Length: 249
Length: 137
Image (cartoon, rainbow over all chains, first blue to last red; front, side, top):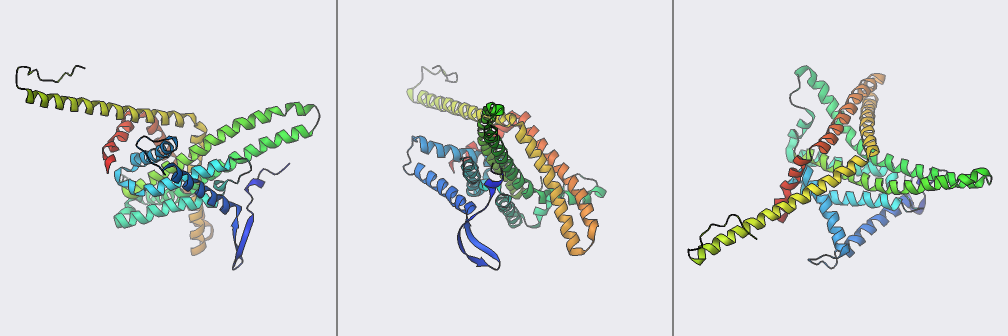
């Protein structure tokens, strides 16, 4: 029986050379990322190629996606947050499609690697910090000093607020990564039970359909989680961007 | 249809009557548009609410990630301070404790957020309706 973590292995496909000791190569992870971006770009281009006032089903699908993300962004950041719409929409689509592509049997799940989700989270937090300082200058640091706290408690609370801010990219990336990793491992373990039950070739192989049913149920649940985690990632992105736009709540 | 706000000026000239009729129709149209967009906001809100209620597991995972990330951030910060200042275990210990506090803060904040989202549907429906007017630009 194959190991349940074998599906997360990174393999090189084309090696371009080395920088120092580390190889520069196109890996399966990179290939799937290119594939994901290709799917998104092709899908959106195809669906908006012939725009009509009364949309056909593909156009209305992409319009629904647009409306969904735009409403989410407007709800939490207001009108001026719409300047971040390209970033938020790209992030949402990338995470969503990466999670869904991972559900195809045999496919590689890009978002099950913490370095990928952490890079996405750092992109968000970097945008928040840079934009916050450009827009508000040192007033942005007011985010760390809550109002209405007694004076002797203020240094403590400020340090805790700073750590809390530093933990944002970690929690943002950890949540997506942990959900995808745990889901795929559980799926693989239950699927492995089918094989090993059948392989006993005795009385126990009668029980083989049970983990099979469980696997089917879990595939449905994992697809739900894939969508939900993309949604949660985007909602938190919007909430953090709101801090950059309006610090000092 | 009967419009309630038509001024009963039947005996007067046709042009003010037309004006009144037009403005009444405009008002009715406005009200109906408002109703429809209201209904849409409420509907999406309730759909989202049921989705978030359905995933108790998602909520649990979210809260635990908030808590753990606070501790990890505190630990990392303390480790880095130790490394650069050479105060070997102390900054790590203090920052881990502060990280525990930060994790708690994160979690309370997240759960407060979740509760607020679940309980006050009307206020968030209002918030959803507010930007509808800005859609043209």
